Image (tube, rainbow, N blue to C red):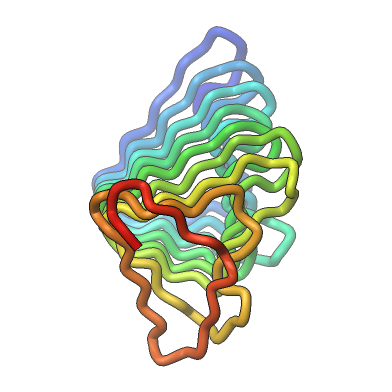
Length: 212
């Protein structure tokens, strides 16, 4: 496995710009009170296990501008932003794939995904897995392909901000977006692509400057 920033008061960083890394163990970015940053600008990262950005009191940041991060393996191993420590995913390019398990944004601590470009191909996205968590998906650009976006607990503060990016359906769903605290349309607008699937959005969309 890989641990970046794994002790109280410590800081660590990894920069990948080329090549292929195959990891069968877990990846923890920010662990045990430490601060970790993984900057991914190119190449391929194949992870066959759990990925935690911010874990056990650590602060984790994943910056993705190019290349491919592919999360595989079973449904019990998640790509988890905010897994016990504050987690942030900043994506301006590149590709994330995680279709074999749910994508967790804010498991037990606060988490933010700032998507300004690139592509993410996911299964179900859960924003705010547990009560008391504040989790926000800022879809400012790029494409997020999902089977569903929902929350894991009504006690979480779960927010989806549409601001110019595209949300694409990866499967038919009568509850494509549902259960969130807030789904807001900002000035960049909301772009929904059904990909010829039949989808229904029970979630109420509110006007944050982009109209409805």
